[in-house]
Image (cartoon, rainbow, N blue to C red; front, side, top):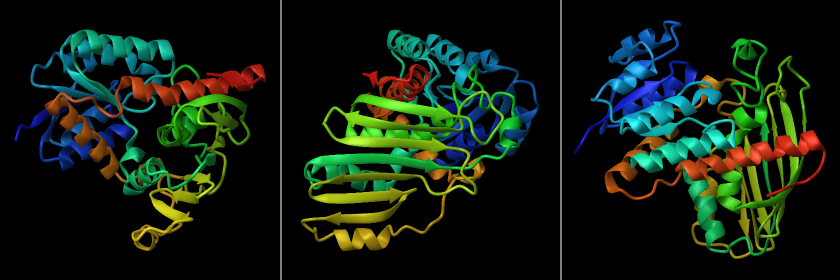
Length: 344
């Protein structure tokens, strides 16, 4: 079995998830990490027994590194991603892929030209309950889909926003939607398919930040179902993220990685066991503490990317797929700013 050599660009909180995930996989090895001069890269390198590079240019010059993960502030993803492509390295980029569509398009084009792979982190796709939900929809168990919603009632303290890039338009690209709720935005479009139009509202109600800390939208999907999107970081003390899918033959509600409701007009032999095994616990991973999110889903995301690199088959969350959630979030901002529906 080949061991793939990784480098991490960025040394903040999310880089720790990347490092721990790489260490967890038996076909991955962390070669090095770089930061922005704060000393965190050196601390991370010592903890995970790898090298600390002065900057991403130095890291990308290392011929030993084959796959790079990007863990910088969101508005700084493009430059190292493009340089990595020019050096023949595959890239797995943290969400959001970037904060502007033209920057994402430049990243995609660079890797297409280089023949390297570009993928994104949307690790909630790798839960067992997401797979069950996706399968139930594919099997037509919901009947005619009528409504789908996501609900992200999270909390972030004022201390969280003291990091100079968080909640800024320049580097965070937005607030609660672009940073926190984008995971569920991705899950919504992954499960339900493309959105046809939306009407959104955003507000900054609980924090002194440039971007929004609360946002909502009414949605019409191309499959004619209606829906809603809600995300906030101003809901103390933070509650579980939630996705609900309902139709003429069934309803399913997921809270975090658990199942709150699972009922269909035609009961299958597995439904009772599914309800029992994945019963909602009330725990809300990451709802108030971003460090409380389990790393195993990041590891699953990385493992799937390695499999794609090895097999040559498309990666499920390639650059174009990771772009979709950003497009939806930006559409919400546009709709709210212009106070009118956004047509895709």
